[in-house]
Amino acid sequence: MGLIWFVGNFGSTINCFIFYQPNLRKNPCVMYLLASSASQFLTFNFALLTRMLHFGYNIQSLNILLWYCKIRFYFFYILVAIPRYYIIFASVDRYFASSPDIYWRQWSSSKIAMRLIIGSCLFWCLIYIQVIVFYQIQNDSCSYRNGVYGIIFSVYISIESGILPPLMMLIFGFLTLNNIWKSKRTTRPLTVGDVVRSGQFAGMSRKDLQFSKMLFNQICLWIILNIPNPCYLLYRTITMHDRKSSFSATVESFISNMSYLFIYLEFSLTFFVYTLSSSLFRHEFNRLIRHKILPRLPSNTTLRNNT
Image (cartoon, rainbow, N blue to C red):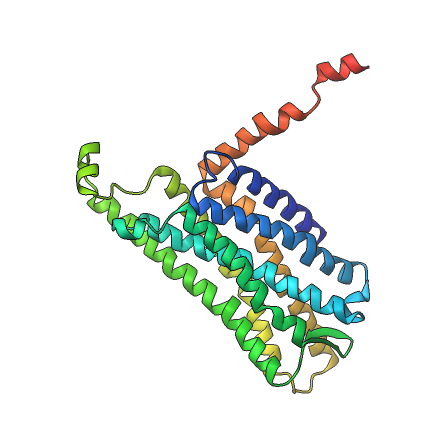
């Protein structure tokens, strides 16, 4: 977990610096990716850090202090949901941006992106108030209340994090690819005057195509690594009243920890997915190093003069 925490902090920080560059940050897709990276940074330094303290250093405050139990899981669910749905918004934005219909392309705007980013954050803060109400310490473990609410919450989490996000990501991902393929087949050479007079779509820009490629690869990784957790929660609810041996309990505990670890692993790999997917992102990363990071480091000449 320590390696994931370090790599995740490094990657999300670099992502934020790159996406905040003046030539990128006004793009609505980049705004969603920037907001997602910023929320991932908070996830690493709250949700993952507290998990490391609990399992790595055997600090048992989570299973002793009720207020900490409630607050920790409240922010955990918020900080995991927010970047997930920012990626969904980004995939919807790519569909709008690639649409041949000028009406739908107008929905890909920085103004709409800002509203959705703020609105989504407030929405999840309200939705997960239920965690503060219904989470409790039972059997020396911080978890949702057993009974009817436990069943409802497990089904809800399975839908909210295991079914709805990948379904929406795949739908809008393939719709975007379909728009791109159509534009490549139907686009003919146009003059500027033709485009202005007819409003004909001349295809996505190279920069937008790069963002779409980055996003599609991130969606594929997200689906692979995020599905196990809601599946486990649903299984745990279904088998809640079954008698289990100590070996089964140990196996289930291991699977539970791994399913949560996969969530953090996906977040930590985002930077590498972007780097491998996009020459534009690699170029901006190299430019960030050359113009922002290296000039701040003390040169050999300066060190010799100081000595």
